[in-house]
Every structure is written in structure tokens, then in C-alpha cells.
Image (cartoon, rainbow, N blue to C red; front, side, top):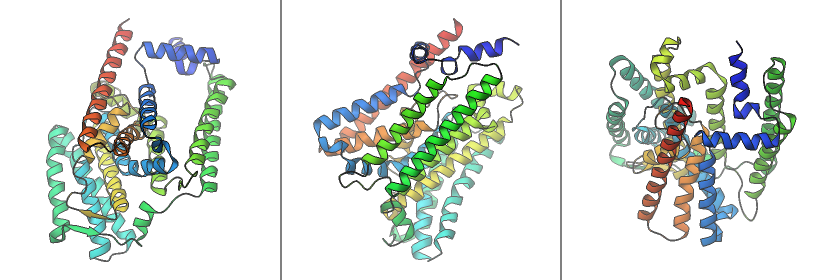
Length: 412
């Protein structure tokens, strides 16, 4: 019975009681391959430094607002990819599913003239329905997820073309509520500061309550200084970002961006604070081990396929709102590749069992930074693909190396 508390106390994140111990614990985690989001943050800092040195406009409030707006749709799709990668699976059809959702939105609201709430529900419904089919075929017949979703890609693309019909391209009126949401609706500064304060207060309350519970149970808990450091850093980050995005003509945080962040935070809570989230990581670590532990593996797998397709549909709706329309190429091109790349670059392991919802946020920021930075430098789009590919390979190498380090530390 003594081993449980001792293992918890030795965990570098929960055992650190002072600032020097926090630094020491970070070094220990790095040596054992537990790098967390550090490589992504370092890479993002390097990218922003280089692009700003080459073109100071890159870090202007206006450009950063554009960066966040362009990140939202792909980032939402990437959340679903993160969920599937946690169990070592992938969905290649997320681009086509998003295109189908966008097509349903455009046709329903423009050609059929249906009320917007009904059209949004219809566009959103295609996601979970497709994901449910994937999950059932995957669990009942053992069809590999790669092949299954590749077939789904073709089927969803065909359905998208059928929905669009001979029109091929449909423009949603600018005065439509959904287009206003995707292009012109921004959170007022005072409301954004209020949201920031609420988030900081909620995080502080949770950390204090957790520390109190652990102390009452006789377990190692974060010190008041460690909690203050985390809360202070979070407050500084949130308020500084909200303030800067409103400077020099910046329009602030878009409503679509706020929705993306809310979905990331909600998914994070789902994965870290619920029994379902623990089951997801258990299945990603070992399917057989999870099954022996009494986890309904098939139910978890089906749920993740449904969630992934649902996020793809939401991303398609946001993309159609942002572009004020849908066409035969919606969801095509490199959208699904960028979503997958964002999840991996953000720190989600391709081998399953490791990652977080914030991987989607960080990864899509990296990809969008590369795209906008190279555009400001007037470089050809071919350079963007080459650079993105190189960054993706580097992320996979970091993941592989850290995985080996953790395995070696485990054997030791």
C-alpha cells in the first residue's frame, strides 16, 4: 500500500514544492523523454522570431488576428484527429466530411431557403452518423481504420458532389448570420477580459482544491508558490494576448476563434477529468490491458470515431462560414493533411497513448504561422509545402526519440 503514494510523490509535476524543485523536475522529465509541449513552444518561438526579423509585419496585431481566424476551422478538425491518434488510429476522410457539411450548409440555406438552425443541425448531423458507421465497421468486422476511412473519403466526396449538384459552387450571402459569425463577429475587449478573469479564477480554484485534497490524503501537493506561479503565468498570457490583439487596428478575438478554444478546453477536460478520458489513454496504451481492466474497448473506439467525424463537420461549417460559401473543392486539397499534421506537430504521438487536446491548438498555430510567414515573404506555395513537410518529419523524429527514452527509462 505504500507504493502508490511513493510513486505519486516521485512524479515530477506533483512532487515539486519549491521553484528550484520545479526546475529540477523539468530536467528529470526531459531526460526521461517526457518533453511535453516544450519542443512545440520552442519551435513556434523560433518561427515567429525568424519571420518577424524578415518582415516586422508578421507580429502586428492585424496579422495575428488573421492568423487566429485562419487557424480555427482546421484546428477544430485537428481536435478529432488528436482523439483518434490517442488510440493509434487515423481518419483520412475528415476533409471530405468537412466539405460535405459545408455543402449541406450552403445548399440548405441558399437553394432550399431553410431556417439556419435546421440547416446547421443537418450539416452537423452528417459527422456523427459517418463516425458511427466507421466505429461499427471497425469494431464488428475489424476493418483497418486506414482503409475504412479511405473508403469513407471517397464516399463523402461523392455525397458532397451530389449535394452541390450542377451548381458546383454556392455563395452564402454576406448578411447571413453564419457568415457574419465566421468573418465579422469579434468578442468585445471588455467581454474578453471578463472571460480571461473567469478562466484564471477557475484554474486557481481547481489547483487550490486539488492541492487541499491531496494534502488531506497525505499525498504530495503543489505548494502555494507553485500554484501562484502557474496562475500568474496563465493570467499574464491571457490578458497580454487579449490586449495586444486589440492594438493598432487589431479587431481582437474572433467569435469563431473563441469557439475553437472552448472546444479545445472542453476536450481537454473530457480527456483529463472523466472516466472516459482515462479509458481513452488506457486503450491507447494497451488494448488488451484495457480490456482486462474491464474497459469496454469497443465502446471507446466507436465514441472516438463519432467524435472525430463530428469535429470534422464542425470544422466544415466554420470553413464555409469563413469563406462565405462551398464548392466542389471544399474540404479537399491539403485540409485533411494539415489537420493530421497539426495534431502530430502539436505533440500527439503516432503510436497512441500520448497527447492532449492542446496539441491541435499548438500544431495549427505552427502550420498557419508557416503559411502566413512565407506569404508575407512573397515565397511560392511550393516552399510552404516543403517547409511544412520538414517540420512534420522533425516532429515525428522528436516523438520517436522521446518514446525510446521513456522506454529506456522504464527498463532502468
